[in-house]
Image (cartoon, rainbow, N blue to C red; front, side):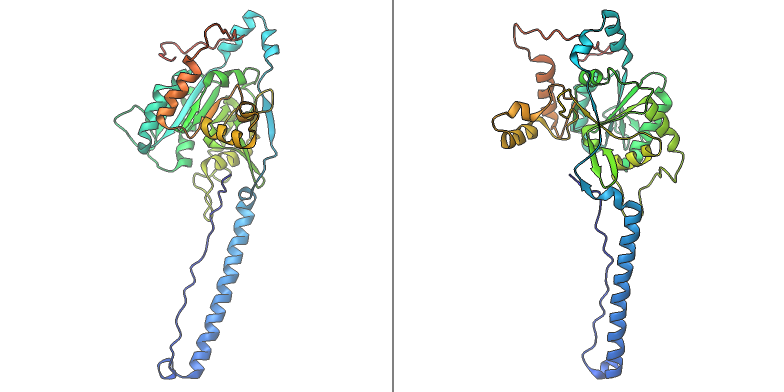
Length: 347
């Protein structure tokens, strides 16, 4: 688990003392300079302690990472879904509309192309928000390289343009692979008029936040509140702290906390995480090491929504495994079908 805290040290300038009494002006001068040097070191040390203490007052409770103790929300029970009438199933499947925000930079061109060609086609609408204009792909240019500023602008634009069209907003990085149908299933019984802030949660000091590497889901109500708090620089500043700069996912959690939206960890009915901050390969290796007799059970949820850290070609392999590969004679007969967006060429 990564800590956002950067160690800060003040440079200590050591002035060498001359070795001859003639050059230094005599023994008295040497004693005087030594005393001044000691005083300088002491004052510098006191100042460092003071700066560190003040830093802890403002940001200390966000920096010490420990095991998370957060809210847990689970996917709906499959039996409950199967008991719904056909009309109710259709209404539910059509009521969940997901807008996908993918934050990209020019250095991400390989991942950008892979996301565009694979899972993003399954969003009801997906748009790429780029730090600068890139001629190769269509994107919304944000004209900033700072990740927190990019996230703020993307959320603000998404709310202003699509608040009446979509009720769930999924933000991802270009290294993330998402299974949107599983996301929709997870959201099936969640009320988007409530302030949901969902993903893989992490506890850092007193701050609970959703790790951006696994993707972040906001309900339209959370996004509405966030858009409003963006206008209050005291609660949600455009720039991070002067001493320690928070990562964009932590800064988002700070802003949402003022709105009454708190990070919630998404799990399946068995309590397994469905937003993963690692790739399938990494999770399998960990399971082989930690649960050698139960690799599949110890690895991943059957209803996983995201994996992260995938190379572009691995995303195409994931598409094959998730959407195309089928065992002949096996029919899953899912109770719900999430139809692709109109005019979509998804799998």
